[in-house]
Length: 140
Image: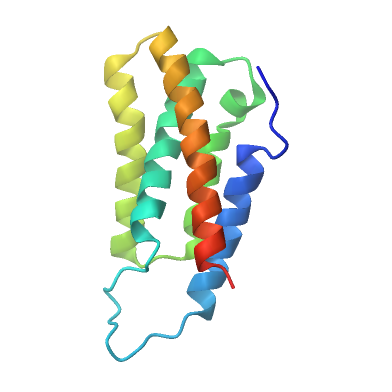
């Protein structure tokens, strides 16, 4: 396994911080309402789904790792929610997406398979890309 210069954990932590700063620093325009979604909403929902999938996949493919033992992916999701401080409706959307990511793989995989490992590899890459996109476009 090739080590990357930045861990996905670190990138997600940075994304959470940046997203929190974006939310804290944003000033609603007259056209916005409290229910209007932030511009990065779709990417954040996808990231939540990836975190849920990784939470499950790591538990079956890498059960002896610290990430599996400590529930790192779930903790990252919790940190992401805390950093963005979404309203109740939006928070539920994030939780639902996390659970959808988790549940989708839980239904398909009872043990680690080559396709589960491939999914982990792809999700790590997509997660890094999402974090980069969110932080580069929406942080100040």
